[in-house]
Length: 104
Image (cartoon, rainbow, N blue to C red; front, side, top):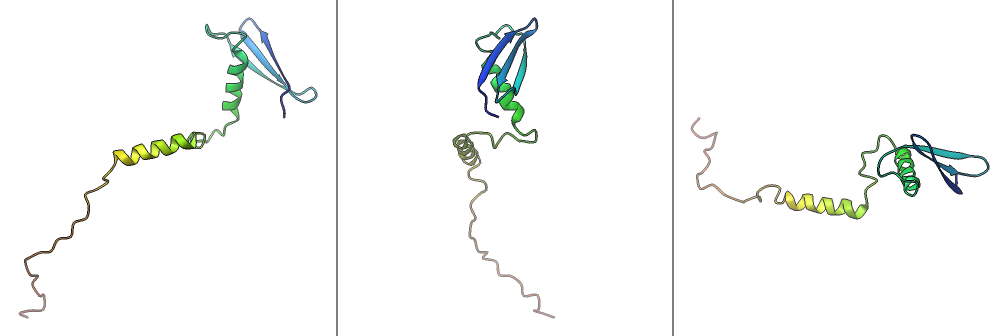
């Protein structure tokens, strides 16, 4: 649904922001009054709530992050964990191994 019109109504409890679509379809968001909520910022707050509402509930949030931010977090994690273990060392023992078949 494409949104064509945004109307903000003040109520005794806060604001109602109505997003008008095609024909008579509309979506309304009710915002409870807070000290920082004004008629000027009510539409932006309502848009934020709508965007959060349409995200999948099972989302872990990682997919919604900016790919550049995810890459940066990965690099930080790799740097913090390097080296993951001590490097493999090649050693040889100077003690000869006893032959299990000797002496029987």
